[in-house]
Image (cartoon, rainbow, N blue to C red):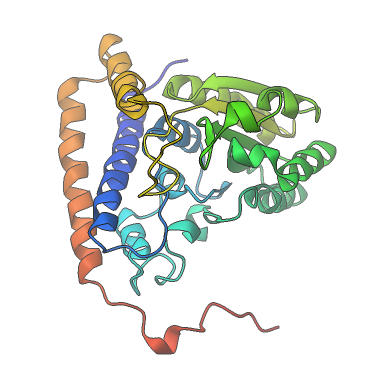
Length: 321
């Protein structure tokens, strides 16, 4: 597979934006500037970007409670996201969605979802719409290893197979469902499970942007041509806990330290593109500087933004027919 320098630099910029956004969100949460529970995505950037870099605005994604990375990968405004996470009136969802319910329909982002396994049935609806209207669009659901045990996901897999929907199921297996190891809680193998529904299914190294991207290209091409769903299991690593503040007593000594040293997808990407002379270190370092400035601006603008007024409490909450 050949890649243009512009495509790769854009992919790197997005991965670096996710990494720095999540690191800063952690600091702002610890400083008391972010309410509620927050689940960050750092460590898994190659999967979210490897998938979403191939999607158009009109293609749909559905996310999880760990959704910041998917939002940024799909093109959601970083400053609007920071405002939303801080509960500000001019956030992407007027400060009412917060970390676990960010959505931006204009970017094809149906929303993060606090319900484990809640996304695939919704994404099936988007995929059915695309098939019925013959738009040629695809829909992608992001799932964790924990959601692979949910009945909603099994039903969505079955329906997508029966109706041959253009739905690509991404399973980001980071080895933990909250604090429970997948080796204990997931019976069998996620990829083999999805194959049982008659769906083409592959397992990839989710820390390898290129492996994810190439598997997704095949899946998208199949879906756009009417070939139905695909399942991709990406083996990834979660640098943090289930949520910010998780004591993580279930993890081995130095597990996170070793993962950041030896299993960092951004390090892998930089090593690959410099070795193959696809990008220069100078170009990526410049991106690092620009992203740092963007994240700082996002934080300062969010801190200066107003909270929603009391009069807005019930707007966008109840729907009248």
